[in-house]
Length: 223
Length: 175
Figure 1 (tube, rainbow over the protein chains, first blue to last red):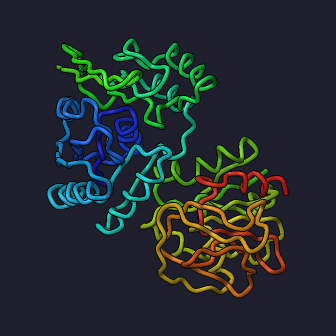
Figure 2: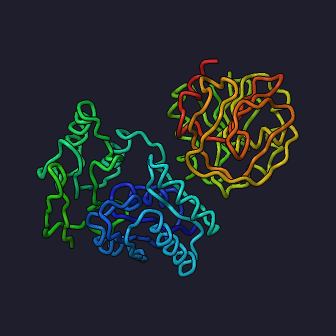
Figure 3: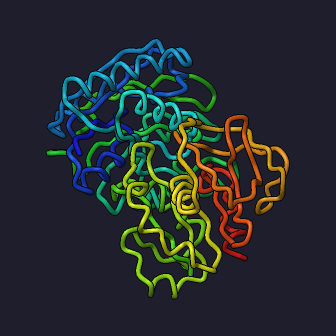
């Protein structure tokens, strides 16, 4: 089936896209929403402009829509972007990286239904430890580009998801209820390399901004 | 052993509609697609769970003859969403259009695997069905959400207990 991926460049959307391709579907285009609202209910925001680089190394066209990120209105912007994927690329369905957010998932399902498109959520309800271990075994190189909860600090920015990361974040889960896969918005990620890429992306520069005591966001330059 | 029946046309949808059920039920289940079920599978199973599928996937409802075995099956069965429709249609229901997406308030008039009074459930359906052979356990403002066959141990729900209220499936497995 010809599919468009709702693509933020973080681990969830990239891994969901990978699973769809592995199952034999065609990734016809990527759809990225650039939100001006850093607290968006729907969209991941750190380093999202780098999805252009990711689309390049995946060899897949990218549709970009901007949104002010206002609750519910941003859904109209998303619908417009998905409609473009259908009209311009003839996609028959959408892939999302939704894991637990019924808010996100049910709204995207509704949009797909209105546009007569299939909706695939291959990570839906996935157990977090199993998920992170799969990322490592499937050769995904994933770094943190934002942390937004206690007890995270700046030292976690650009850390890679590896076995040590999983052990540490599981400890944080026991002590502070940090979701192991960051599903509660505790951290955001960026995929530097995976089997969908023709080459690895390298971080050549970074600009870290502090947004709160335990809240840091990185804008990374990649090539 | 629990026979977990997939109603998904696309294999990729099984990660969304079948795998979460498997994760709850654990190792004591084996998965088969609805059109590959054999008499041997039905004999081997102590109980059966029939999964849901995506909103636009109608294949299972066009192949209801694959569920003819339900009429004479005397072990516990639990149907979810598309699985619910398959059960209801086999027992004489008709499909109607009623959409509910997301979290829905449901009133459990009778205890349904521990759910009683008002509960929030996760819904993803564009249709509704109800056979006269079933007793109503729960309903939302829009439609009936949980039922049980009047004479058989066949339970079915329109909501998705693999998303919210996961304990319902655990309790069914303990029957």
